Length: 65
Image (cartoon, rainbow, N blue to C red; front, side, top):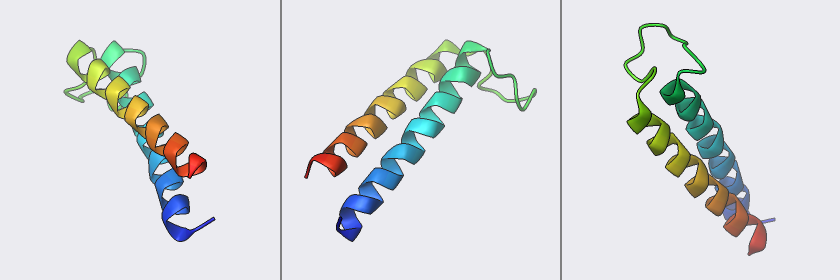
C-alpha cells in the first residue's frame, strides 16, 4: 500500500470517529464535556453524520485504489 493510500485510510477513520463523537453529542447521548455548546443540538448531529459519511467514502476510496 502506498503512503497516500495509508494516509487516506487513516484520515478517513479519524473523520468517522470524530463524526460519531459529534453525532453522539448532538443527539445528547454523550454529554461530555457537560458545558459543551454541541450537547443536544440537532444541527451538530447532522454535521457529524455528514463528516462520518465523508470519512467512510475516503476510507472506501483509499482501499479501492
